[in-house]
Image 1 (spheres, rainbow, N blue to C red):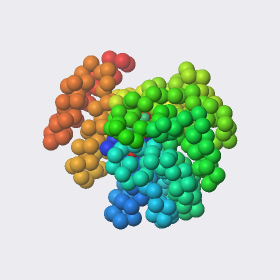
Image 2 (cartoon, rainbow, N blue to C red; image 1 turned 180 degrees about the vertical axis):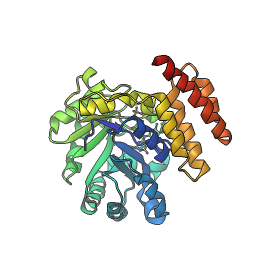
Image 3 (spheres, helix red, strand yellow; image 1 turned 60 degrees about the vertical axis):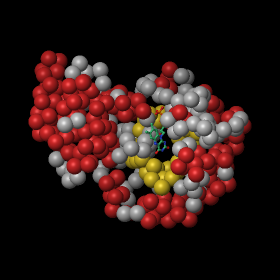
Image 4 (cartoon, protein in one colour; image 1 turned 30 degrees about the vertical axis):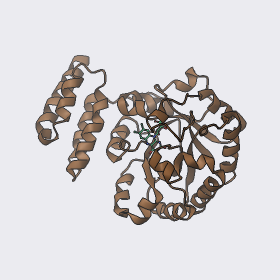
Length: 322
Ligand SMILES: Cc1cc2nc3c(=O)[nH]c(=O)nc-3n(C[C@H](O)[C@H](O)[C@H](O)COP(=O)(O)O)c2cc1C
């Protein structure tokens, strides 16, 4: 799987509807699901997972949890779905996740983290990866990061997505934990130098597709983009040309919008359509009629009328540009 460009997992955002939107813009970007706790799969409604498998490959399922047995069982179940990879979240610092002892807390317990990935590798037929931070709390990131990676690697994990900052487990909210601990992109570059055989994908604060070149981090195996992709998904439009190294005709705003409206016709649940409409807001960043379009999108009860108005605004742009 080519991981040059990866959409970061984001709870409440990278659901099936947002992933559908991103897939219209790029066929090559690797999509991540939201994190799902292994017990939610074991004891929950298994039918909900079918929604993840609708022609969205390449796609990675992100699991949360710290019980090797439960992670192993779920990994085995996931062989009958269409995921290209499963990933263990070892980077989330939210208080709920912390009190459950998974996410970034697992960086404190490398042996437990190792048992978790071991169970996943033993039970899943395709790639198992992890998403980590540079460290937690008072870790010295020059020392502990390499040690941690070495332990996880010993279980056959070859793919590491690295959020290039520490997680502070006490005193910071999840949002603050994505902003306050400083970014150390170059530290991820040094990790790759220590482990050249591993696939290392860098994450955190990346706002454009030429990040690796600009930061002199071309040895890394790819970039993972979260918030910028959500708030401005059209930045992803050149990915296919970059991955395939040939020019593709860029999808227009009109075409993405139209394909989303066509997709909504196939959805049964009004709540799914509502989520999809919300995810579309970022598409119009910078458009002179963005405000008007967003108001129309918020009007899900009058979708038919709003849809025609939005499409005619965007169609006029296309005619002008032609
Ligand atoms: C709303 C939101 C939800 C997130 N949920 C997850 C998650 O479920 N699993 C995970 O590993 N990271 C999660 N993250 C962290 C992102 O994957 C990413 O590591 C972080 O936002 C930094 O990347 P960025 O600067 O490109 O956004 C979330 C981030 C945001 C903004």
